[in-house]
Length: 105
Image (cartoon, rainbow, N blue to C red; front, side, top):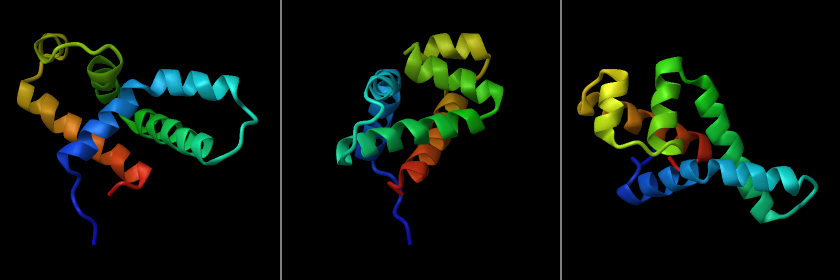
């Protein structure tokens, strides 16, 4: 039986999402590197990309605004025309999917 993600897990996943572009760039410049660290970075990048690509367009837009453009919630509310509660609900669902893909759950 799996345990739900903790606050620490959510923060760690959000940090990895924010680092996605720099991690992907690092992988690009170290293509033949072997080892546990590179395997872990590759797993993180591939998991985030897989979940992002499986999202519908509005969820992808939310994903970009939340973690890659780091917009405040009130700006996202205005752009997407949704409530803070809806944003937080979708945010949790996305983080849960990435957590499952990373094997945290």
